[in-house]
Image (cartoon, rainbow, N blue to C red; front, top):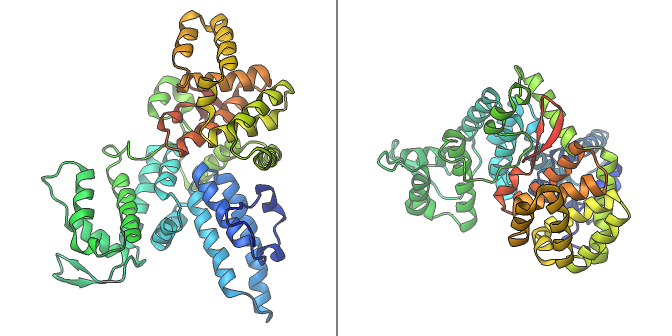
Length: 424
C-alpha cells in the first residue's frame, strides 16, 4: 500500500517515463505535486512537468495509432493533469490559450483543488501592466460568460427568459447578473445575497456552492478590481504601482505584443526560479530533512544553527523553507532566547538602539523576519543581495500561501535592473 500523501520529487520530473506513469503510485504523487505547486506558486516547475507529460502522452498516442492498447482512464488522468498545470502556469500561456482554458475547464480546476483566484492575481502581479492585465481580465470574463461546464444537475430559472435553463456555468452567470440589486453598493453584498438566497443556488450541494462562489469571486474581481483588491492574497514577483512610482521608469514593464509579453513572463519566471541545479539540490535537502526531522520545530532549529555554521547554502535554504512551511520562522525569532539576544546585539551596532529595542519588544514582525533572512543569507552565507532577495521572496510567498498577507512585502523583481530587491 503506497503513501497517499507522498509527493513526486521535483527532481524526478526529468526522468519520468511510461513505466513510472503506469505505476500504481504515480497518479496520486503527481496530483499531490500539482497541488503543492499551486499552493507555493511555482509556475516554472509546473511548466517543466507540462513539457514532460506532453512528451510522454505523445508517445502513448503514437502507440495507440500503431495498435498498442493503452489504459484510457490513466491517459485521461494525465491529460487532465496537464490542464491543471496550465492554471498554475498562466503567466506562460498565450492569450487565446488562457481564454480557452477558462472557457472549457474552470469548474474542473476549482473542483480539483486549484486556487484559481490566487493564480489570476499572480498573473496580474507578474506583469503589472495595465494594457496586458485589462486584456487578460476581458478574456477571462468573456470565457466565463461562455463556459458550458455543468454545475449541478437541476435546471435553473432565468428571470429574463421566464423558463428553466440547463445548469451550465454560463447560465449561472446570467442568473447571477440578473439578480443584481443596484441599491446594494457593495459587490461583496451582491455576491452574498445571491449565494445565500437564490433558490437554485440553495439546491446545489455544499461542494457545488463553493465552486460557484469561487467562480463568482473570480468574475467580480476581474470586473471590479478596485473594490475587491483585498479579497485575495497577492504573491509578489514584480512591485506594485506604488513601488514603481518610487523607483521610476526603470521598474516599469514595457510590452507591446503577445510575443513580448511571453518573453517578459519567461524572463521573470526564470529569474524567480533561479539555477535549476540549485532548485533540485534544495529540493533534495528538504526531502532529507523532512524524513529525518518531520515537523519537529525544535530539532529543525538545532539543525539550522549547525548548518549555518558550516555555511551549507542549499541545506540552510531548505531549512528556512521548512520552518516557513510549518509556520515556525516567526516563533523561532520570538522564542529562542540565544538567537534573540544575539540578533539584538548585532542589530544594535548596525542599526541603533531603537531598532534593537523594537526587535526585543516584538520580534515576530515582518521587518525583523526580513532582516533575519538578509543577515543569514547575505552576512553568514555570503549570497549577493539580489540572490538573497530572490530566496527571501520565495520564503515570503510561502507565508503568503499560509494566509499571511503582509509577507507580500518581502522582496520583488525589478525588470529594468533585472535583479531582486528587498523591501525597506
